[in-house]
Length: 57
Image (cartoon, rainbow, N blue to C red; front, side):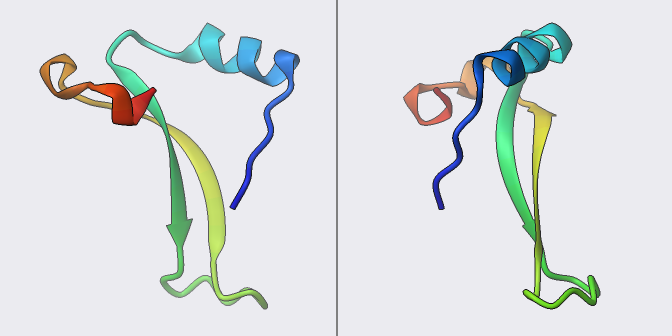
């Protein structure tokens, strides 16, 4: 999967993002009833700052 974010989208995300949050992709397949068998979403999730490393960047 490839996701491209515009500069406007990045600015909007940054305006809502807290220092302990990272952007994650969630693919929900539980009882969604959609034709493609899942719904992708992008969320800001809090993480422990001690565990943040290059995999989140």
